Length: 100
Image (tube, rainbow, N blue to C red; front, side, top):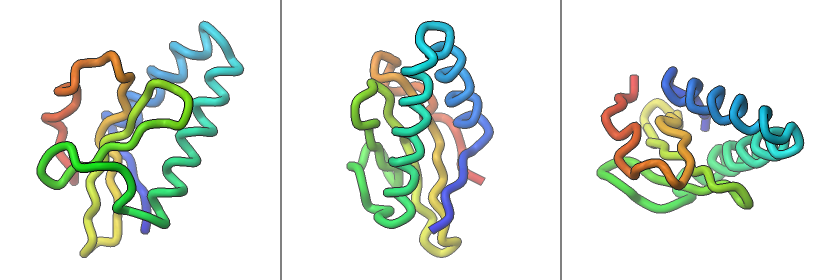
């Protein structure tokens, strides 16, 4: 399946990378690697993670406190990443975002 990010999720990733890079370029690089690994796993296993809202699923990064909220669109064979958030953010962060 194809994995796509909505615009706000791209901004979430940019903000996370900026924040992490200012503190530790090594951790920022690890964030990118872990995010890429989760996206690769989603391509092969779109039912990965666990349900959080109607039609949405969530999966955490392996060693960093960020998670991805996504929606699977089987007819279009796409997975839409809707939110990339730190676990200390309120669980409602990004829930009003829509998928194209």
